[in-house]
Length: 362
Ligand SMILES: *Cc1c(COP(=O)(O)O)cnc(C)c1O
Image 1 (cartoon, helix red, strand yellow):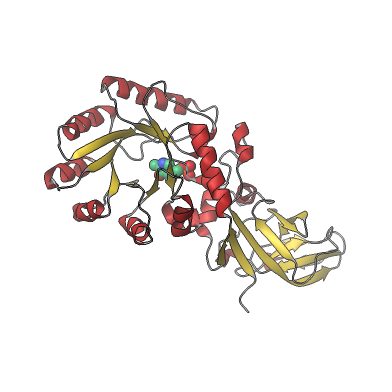
Image 2 (image 1 turned 135 degrees about the horizontal axis):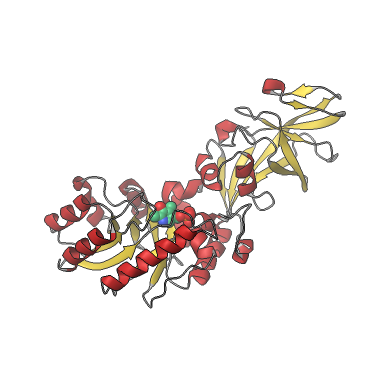
């Protein structure tokens, strides 16, 4: 018998969330499935989305190769482009679209002059200052690329630093900088700027160009606006991943007794506690004391210190809970963002950390 913990992946919820992204952005979308589809399984997710998605976005050639091998034929964008010149030929062979964010990548592409129809996404730094060309450098790169016969399409893209804050002035500044560049370049190709938070909040450019959205987190049903002002559309997301594990022991504490490492939790009154087969070695955050969970259809909380293979849930209000009862640690009834908030992190990190559990796809 294996440990009783699973990650169930609801691929129809994934498709639902993709359709939601398409409706909200009113344009084509690249499904962002980097980092093994945020821990959900890149190949399974890509296959479920292949019939409806315009393309996929990932961060390495290795990921692209695995997708092509598994039969994915839709466009695949390398979000950071190539990492060294030697990757260019394989990127062509795998028919990847490339982000170009550094001068050497542009030089390399132009110098190689491969017999391949390139489709490039020129990344502009409008204020996040992580990747991308300044607007002036972007104009130069755009002009050089435009003159190259084997560059068939150039899109302009940027990325927001604070799209998950509906009131961010930074986002407005970034949009204005991007719009200005599009004007200055007399640009007529496609553009792209929206991640999940920007899609859900309905951000748009004032232009008639085709705007490609890049939904990631929302595809998996997590709400980037948890615990802050949020757009109505967040309510329509459906959780894709359910982490559940069984109760492997029921403990009865007397008033005043403590439980777990550091004896952090103390029972005020006599109570029952469930020991659950999920710990930080499965990716459950060690610091998530007080996080929500669900047992036998009832909401409860994680108490005491999370250990490597186990954690504790409060059963004092749930008399029907017993040995073998299933505990939902996150999923449709327990918002992953709420668990993340209890651990002072984000759903992104929780998803990516899931390991050692059995994945079941439905
Ligand atoms: C990861 C990523 C996204 C998706 O972001 P979400 O917040 O998960 O929607 C979009 N664009 C770029 C450039 C990314 O790296």
